[in-house]
Length: 487
Image 1 (cartoon, helix red, strand yellow):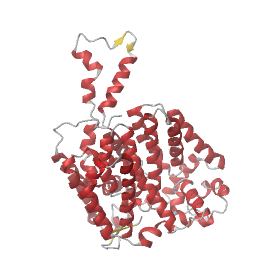
Image 2 (tube, one colour):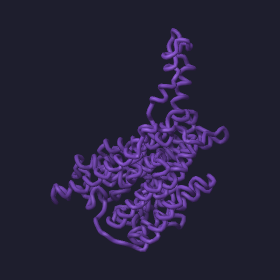
Image 3 (cartoon, one colour):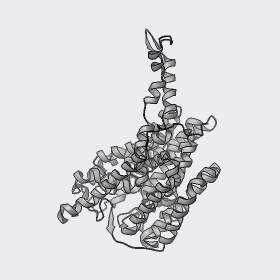
Image 4 (cartoon, one colour):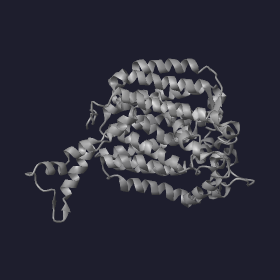
């Protein structure tokens, strides 16, 4: 397996370009903060986000999580990059997971135990509000779609109505086995959401880029997204689908056990469809992995997905019915008032807050990592065009199969896996943005996509790693202490 960086970016990729990309992202966030104040109170009230572009309220504060968060950030900035290079692979995965959980919990504790952690999933709009009323799981699934639309006596609460029944089912089952209440639900979301960082490392290694994985690990630990990973249900969604992608990548690489990995990937992808309708866009990272490594796992992945779809359908919930009703419910609420003219770019500003300036700085490197020109210069067609003595690429029937196979092989060798995954995450969230079904709260809703954009930080120069890690940590701490987020 290839363990060195698969693509050496051109020397002309400068640190100045990193700074320009970060500066543009910072200006975008600044504009998203200033525009509501310029437009006036009446227009600003229609945003339904007191700290736009983030969903929360401006409220400078500190908490008992402040000290641990600062201390952990300092340790990761100073020792994280060297530790990521030195640790064994298993030690790196375990350390990344534990450190990411510690970072997320410390940030949550800035708002206190109840407000920041144990009570977030228990409000009247959240899933746990509905758990006591589910006395029969079969009846809940059969009647789920009938309770999606608003203004009915038995309408589901906001978050339950806006999603398929998968998440509610998880919390109901937790309650049945004695793990009910906000603290257990928060722990599940935090631990699973932070596992997405480990899944990204596994995916990069499976794509032959272990050095990229090690470079990205400290950035995944100090991800600003941790502010919403603890403790939104979308963090749970991100963890489930991230491991679906990771198992898919493993299935493309392994000779033994690949079938089990592919089936597991399909089951997780299928379950993801019943956690959030928007997770159909996880097809983008999945296709990126398949394009990079091959399509061998497609059939068992499809089988795994169909098993999940079949079980929910047999239980009485038809996904497409739920989706069409959710679109109607979406416009029954404040989404009909939130101006798309602001949120179409304000969403991206919120995403910058979740991925940090380091991820933004690496975006031009992501683009260069996908540059097809090295592939074209080394492709068989280019060799034939420049060397008359080269054998013909095609016969009378067209391009030969061998030529196509060689072209695909060279393309896969030319594309940087970290750039490919970051671009896939970015493409998924841009598609979500253009759908018009995501207006505000995307720092939380887009977690399953934005965590993959963080993979691009692996492309930043090693000598600048600590500087960009410091920028990530500082930006996250500023948001945590200036804004009282609603999630």
